[in-house]
Length: 283
Image (cartoon, rainbow, N blue to C red):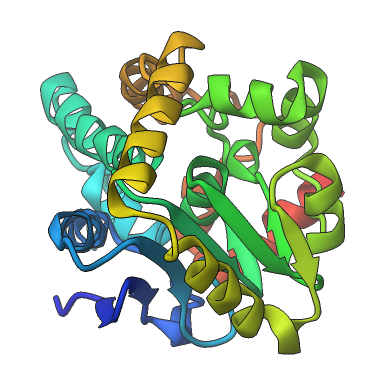
């Protein structure tokens, strides 16, 4: 599988680019490892002062590739419609631990990261926006936390960060209602620093990156280290350990007969049609 992650370097600015535009940059599990590897390369390059995270094509990131997730967790039905052998808890925990450490890598990056957000931003996309230092979004970006609409338990990875960002009640509202909102609302809620017209998005992000790059290297790295320590004092380091255990539990649920089962419906109708059926079920 060819990675979709591109690393560009331009003077003091590095760009991590998701490049799967035909899938709205839906990312597969192994590509999260590649994304972190690219982040590390930018961190270790002393010429780089600031990192931009962006996506090619119509969207920033539409979340994890659901088909890949089903396969990775051993939930894909066989060709004859039978359930595969359930993965061991140790295998699930290891997969989820790697994923949790990927999210932590962006929260704890040694250098400032700016998310340049447009189009659809859900799942891992909105997680990264919530975890990086700064975010600028196109005003018409569509954000949502739709995890529980998959029949999952919702975000388990960084609830501390979400409660600090949104407040406890709004964080629960985002999970339980899964309503989409635009870049203007994201700015009001504190998810992004600015909401600008799409035509101004790239120039605004590049301007911020160049302004940040004027700071001394030691000042940027020391300032980020202090920010990380403050987050850890608020519980935003331990949240990832809880998160990967919670994700294993929260993606291993039993469905009752009267409940919408995304996996079962997907087997009969396919992924795209089941997305539409899922949303109609909750409307």
